[in-house]
Image (cartoon, rainbow, N blue to C red; front, side, top):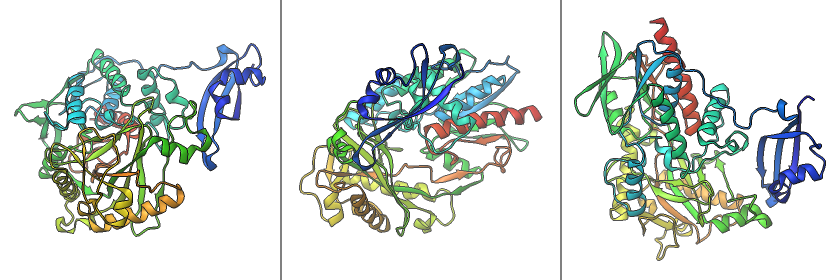
Length: 513
């Protein structure tokens, strides 16, 4: 029997008991099996439906529930490549290199697990920055402590394979069919560590807590990196996947005249609500239903003087400190797989561009200085120890300080502050206009129960390291920029996909050399 593809529109109760629904309504005849292809939750008009696509057929004709995406590892050919960064882009570039018979050497300024967990907990829970930016660097990159969202607007074979690899190492087939797949910060480290073990078992080498300080260049070609100890790590090429907070490295690359350009990004605040409030607004009578989980929202307003949009929504999550440097404070969102926190949060940010830092001219480092100025002001406003400045959303809109603050998921603590004094006036005006628009679209969004927490500055890298059609730097042959930090991706999955493609470009280039 050939496979049949079915599209179903189900209630939350029907989806919760999916197998029973399929059998009792004779959607799947006796003796046949089924596989989920896609599941999307539609909560428009506060009436929740589940849009389900599945394949039906004989068990032997259906694809495996969790297909193994790993390819054979070629015999090493005596080539090695230095990979700067062990986030999604760097790890996936290493996967491709190994499959092409090239040994990757991954150099990561942060720690591996479990040491990275201890460092991040000291910061998240106690507001103590013990050793370097543990939330933004280390095995798995900045996304390790986030919601673990794997959704991307990009498509193509590299995106599909990245999701397959994530699902395989997470041992979670849901990542292949959910419309909004997410792993959760409690499970993402296990996925990443499984990927690390796969790489090491096949010959990759990792150098953790090793900061890259510059490039080795010989006869006009990049042949490795220098590290903080003064030693050199050499290779036939360098993959540059450092993450968006590798500021000292960007400064070093600029001094070495690596071609890069400033690029737009966005800054703003984290908006936190009680989860029950968001669930009730978004899901109506289905709020609290076990099939629905914590409610999501998203908005974008491009017809304001500058664009304002929600970003990285964490339903049932936590606001966490993510300082990229000492004496600087930035915040982000995190949630575990169950999304069971009593709070929900999202970044609400306004677009900024090089015109917002004219004092730096056309320097590609101008955006970094713009970020630092805001982050240092936020750190000072919180009084140190990574206490976050915060304000009720109603008070932020009214331009008055908050006499009291509602409870928050932010563990190091919050302090009342006027957030309009921390952000540039055009950004403040845009955020206020955007929040008022959001309240008209999401009725009840602006409330004195909602908290604005500062500041969100790490939405994306403020620069782009250029690469040509062959994938390497036009100023430094042998240097292959990739991932979010180099300005070529915007999240976990798109960075991973760019890493897979980058590994292929490096291997192709080495075969021609």
